[in-house]
Image 1 (cartoon, rainbow, N blue to C red):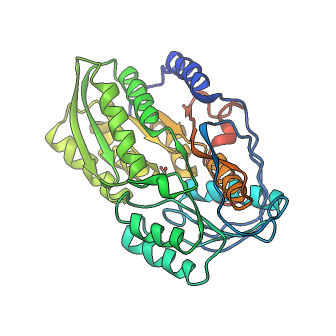
Image 2: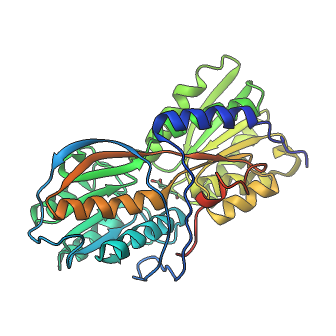
Amino acid sequence: MRRTRLTLAATVAALSILAAACGGDAAEEPAGTGTTGGAAATDAGAETGTETTGAETGAETAGTETAGTGGDYRITLIPGVTGDEFYVSMECGAREAAEELGVELDVQGADTFDPTAQTPVLEAVLADPPDAILIAPTDTQALQAPIQAAVDAGVVVVLVDTTLDDPSIAASAIASDNVEGGRMAAEALAELIGEEGPVLVINVNPGISTTDQRQQGFEGGIEAYENITYLGTEFSNNEPAQAASIVDATLAAEPELAGIFATNLFSAEGAATGIRNAGEAGADISVVGFDAGPAQVDQLEEGLVQALIVQKPLEIGRQGVEQAVAALNGEPVEAEISTDFVTATQENLDDEEIAPFLYRDAC
Ligand code: T6T
């Protein structure tokens, strides 16, 4: 099968400069031990640096304890879904910060990325309210009222990864610059396909802030290429099998398909499976995926995917705990923190600027 080999060196260099301009890109050294089991609380260490941009907004004075660092605070992390290596890596960063600051961290999550599954998890957590929660809301609207209930119960809320229609109820919101990530994906895909041909986006579901923004950034970026036809966006419901079927159906209708941007880990894994299943018919299609779970890295090595836009979930988790503790201590917090990306290709996977950011399946 012929795969479009990577010619992304120039793009990666340009994007690195851009990323540096947008918030720095110093090397971080994650390393950890222990276990992570989705909703199970575990102790683990992880090293990650913190280079982010954000607007400092003065003190939030939630919480009543006056500990020097972490006091006896209890913090619960509620990821978008359990078993997703993006959130596992976020947990690792949160655990490291919790250990350093001397706070107790518990992780509770639903096993599907779905507001109807996540809301009862949040409600159960609030039955015995912790001092703070870090939460990745699975829908910008549906989680607004349940999270407001947490705030009303006196819990400090920090949004991690995804956000709400009105994030002002949270002490802090920490996320990748997802519009920029989508734009980076458009640029990488355009280069891979020689700036011409039909391209498709495989997204998760509408209403998720992160992936909506990636789609938006991609659409904004791709319209600059007059010989690229944007076929639109299909939704995978976070199911790899559904993403693979989308590739199959699109190829049947559009055999000249040149490229795919898949906006998250499961969509990208499924897109790559779809390409593999297509055999020769998929041989010339380039795929740019978001995230960097172990299976995605394998697919990159196999040549089914040509580039991965890699987030920094360890950093998001670490900063989430730091901001929560600052808020609980009545110290200044940053209302919004934006983290950057690296772009992984077959050629640079082992580089020290890339390898530390690949996601973990355990802390
Ligand atoms: O891409 C991440 C996360 O940023 C997004 O909000 C949901 O999907 C992932 O967890 C990957 O599966």
